[in-house]
Image (cartoon, rainbow, N blue to C red; front, side):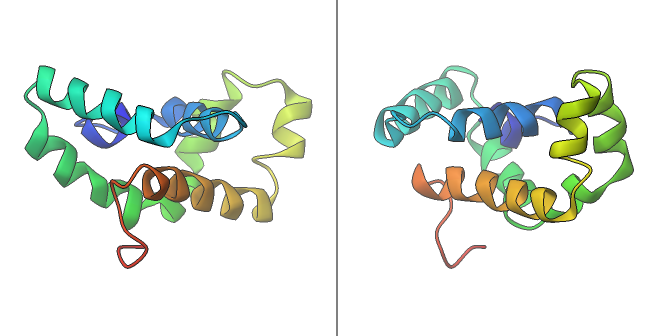
Length: 113
């Protein structure tokens, strides 16, 4: 969730957030509480709130950005890239998954995205 609170785009966080969504036992309520505590610990309430625009408004554009793919090429094997990020429908689904993660934790509402 640091993605929304970061002052700059960390493309790897997008992939990591997707990994979180793949966990079938995720407890969204607990996740929200942990994130809220971190936000308070770092005094990042305003930064986090402002950063939610990156999730709600800019996520589709971020996953389509060439810089995102270039950064992920450093971390992912070629076969994974070919099966995921090099496919248009996967990138669309990825943006939706990240938005849904923030929605399920209650940080954004269905009306926001």
